[in-house]
Amino acid sequence: MSGRVAALQPVTLVLGGARSGKSGFAESLVTQAAPSWLYIATGQAWDAEMGERIARHQDRRGDGWTTIEEPLDLASVLKRESRPDRPVLVDCLTLWLTNLMLADKSVDLEVDALLAALPGLAGPMVLVSNEVGLGIVPENAMARAFRDHAGRAHQKIAAIAETVYFVTAGLPLKMKG
Amino acid sequence: MSGRVAALQPVTLVLGGARSGKSGFAESLVTQAAPSWLYIATGQAWDAEMGERIARHQDRRGDGWTTIEEPLDLASVLKRESRPDRPVLVDCLTLWLTNLMLADKSVDLEVDALLAALPGLAGPMVLVSNEVGLGIVPENAMARAFRDHAGRAHQKIAAIAETVYFVTAGLPLKMKG
Amino acid sequence: MSGRVAALQPVTLVLGGARSGKSGFAESLVTQAAPSWLYIATGQAWDAEMGERIARHQDRRGDGWTTIEEPLDLASVLKRESRPDRPVLVDCLTLWLTNLMLADKSVDLEVDALLAALPGLAGPMVLVSNEVGLGIVPENAMARAFRDHAGRAHQKIAAIAETVYFVTAGLPLKMKG
Image (cartoon, rainbow over all chains, first blue to last red; front, side, top):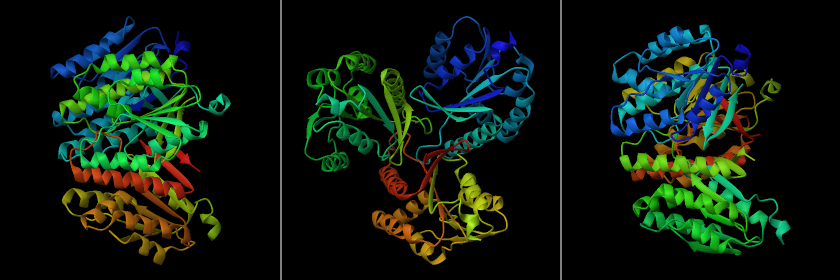
């Protein structure tokens, strides 16, 4: 069975803008690699708009998926749930960073905990995240802080990932690997 | 005559940010393919700033161009005006989506009408659009809705386009084709 | 000695978003090319947040660097300081454009002065700039004007640069050269 996961490297990072097709592309990577998969959703259904998005994501996925919702402690869930025959899709890191900021956690410590966990996991994983740093400097200080956290986290994860994609209009561009 | 248009595929999508040089690049694709061209302008001169932009675009173009302004019904104009020996440049899809939203049209239905029209057109066309999803989540709900519409439209059009470019600083990166 | 700078073309433009790793990548280009380097900082420490960023940048650099702060007259400093054996790193053009706007200078004239100076410089240089045009249209008119200035400056500089990179998550994508 493990041969079917061979095409997927231990750590793949999929970056893209809003509605770029990054999640659909990441799902295709994971589903082509094995017959069953773990989906770790970091999003929380705060409001109707977010609830609708989560529902739309769930509709697109089908059988073979196990879903776990984890807004904060990504490293522990990954360590507990990673298996050689079941690739993991984490969607998405930017919501996780938002959750950490709203919960007054140290984002840097949590990102470091994730980085420490990644190399030792039993099976492959695909991490999805939003690129948010290519617009005008936000006027809101929290948005600027978030943008800084996201950019630094992306750099650190990209440095240890075997494969990095940048997705635009549903089209993946391989940046690494 | 048709041999001169051979280099241009039926559908080309040119994505890029604001002032990325995407329009100038798209114009160069079209003008290299044939001696006369149709420019479909979706922009409307609401205010002085927009009027200035449209004038600047017009200045850059020269003889050989026929211009049609169409803020809303892109599919009908394309079906009526497309000819094998005259490539079409549509600039830009994001303004068209904005116009549809302001006119309270169903953006999804209009995008689907465009998608249905594209494969049957008589001649080649180049569609220009703004990538707007790579900044911080906008605080304004309409801006978020617009960003979602644009991203979804880009994915759908990129899926059927033969060629897709992403332009930065005037430099085209071929994403597909 | 000059052979050690051979790997660096006369003009290299490094574009990227906020926290994209563009400065670190640009520094690596410069430090690999020679044993001593000139850093031209265009930023000014207006407030605590900006002061912190400048300090963080300074920490990362070490011996071998000479630093000059020049918020406005980039062309003159480059002409005066450029030497064949000492590559120059300018970080960053977007702060320089901001400074010009705040000082009520003609941005177009200043960009043209820079463009006129670049081809005649004695040594190689790497220019870093923020890509800011890939988000939603800003509501603030000055932000829109800034975005237009930045995009136009990037196009002009990219046209004469031998090498252009676009950096995301610390990963450089070569757009030209």
